[in-house]
Length: 220
Image 1: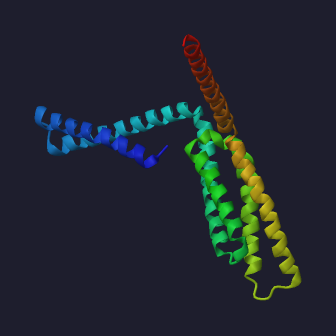
Image 2: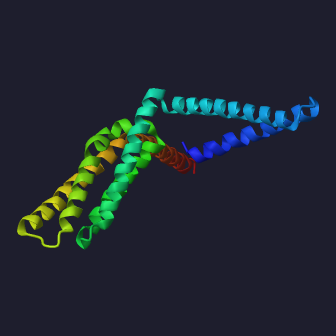
Image 3: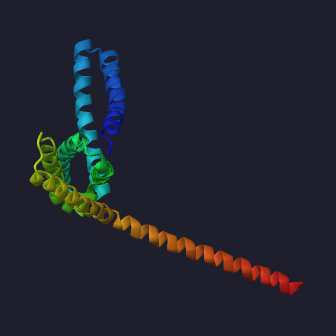
C-alpha cells in the first residue's frame, strides 16, 4: 500500500468536508470564526482517523491478514530495511573488481524479495528463511569481508579468508535466489496453468479451422 497516495486520498476527502462544515457553522449558524474553525478542524481530524482505520481494515482484508500479523510483518520489514541499507554500504565499499557482478546480483535479489514482501505482505511468510537467516548471513559476510580487505597488510591467512568468503557468498546468493523463486512459486504455477489453457484454446481453434477447410474442400 502506497502510504503517500493513501495519505493524499484521505486528505482530499477530508479537506472539502472541513471547508463545508466551516461554511455551515460560520454562515448558517452565525458561529464565530474561531469556533467554526475549531469545530471544522476537530471534525476533520476525527474523519481523517476514521478513514485511516477503514482503509487499513480494507487493506488487511484484501491481503488476508489480521492486524497482529500485519504488525508482525511490518516490524520485520523495518528491521530488514536497516539490514539491507547496511548491506548496500558494505557491498559498495568493496573494491574487488572481479566480484562486481556477484555484488550486483546479491543486491538485486535482496531488494526484489524485500519489495515483493512490502507490496504484498503475505508473501513474507514464503520468505521467512531469507529474513531470518540468509539476510543476516549476507550482511555478516560482507561486513567481515570489508574489514579484512581494508587491512593494510594481508597475510596468507587473510587472503585465504577473503577467497573463502567470496566462495561462500556465491553459494549464499544461490540460496537467496532460491528464496525468491520460492516466493514466486505460486505465480509460476498460475502462469503455467494459464499457458496450458491458452495452448488448449489455440489448439481447439486450429482444429476447428482445419475441419472447416476440409468441409469446404469436400463440397467442391
